[in-house]
Structures are given as C-alpha cells and as structure tokens.
Length: 80
Figure 1 (cartoon, helix red, strand yellow):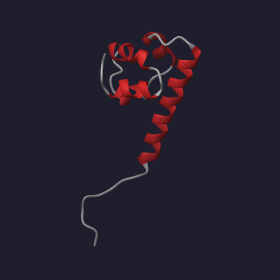
Figure 2 (tube, helix red, strand yellow):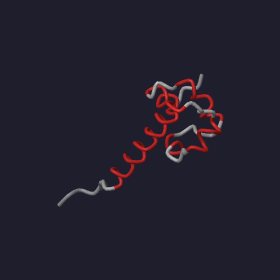
Figure 3 (cartoon, one colour):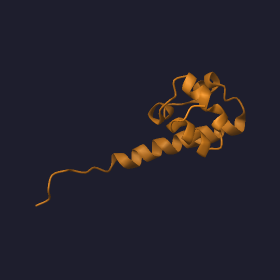
C-alpha cells in the first residue's frame, strides 16, 4: 500500500481504499488533489455518492485553507 500524504488524507477521511487509485491516476499530492472535480472522481473510480461527497467537501476545505493562507505573509528581515 502506498504511504504518502494523499494516503494519509484519505485515511483521515476514512476512505483509504481509494488511495491506490488516486496515486495511479496522478493524484499523489494534495496540490493536485485540490483540482479534483466530478469527472476526476469518475476516472479514479469513486462512484458511490457518500464517498464522492466526502472527498469533494474535503477538497473544498483544502481550497479554503489556501485562500485563508493567501492573506498571510512573513518576512525574514529584522524589524526596526
């Protein structure tokens, strides 16, 4: 079984059975997973409504985290 961030993400969603299909279809990074939509889930083989909804909700949360983080920045320069 694969052990990467996508596997851990799917395991947290209680959907680890899809991890191999995700990786086999090129979804081996959460940045790539943020782009998942219904056609992608069809290709991956996630056909049951409940897991699809759980994954799409998680993808939405990943995107929202990115949007929240976009407003944050930091600098390594010393403050006066």
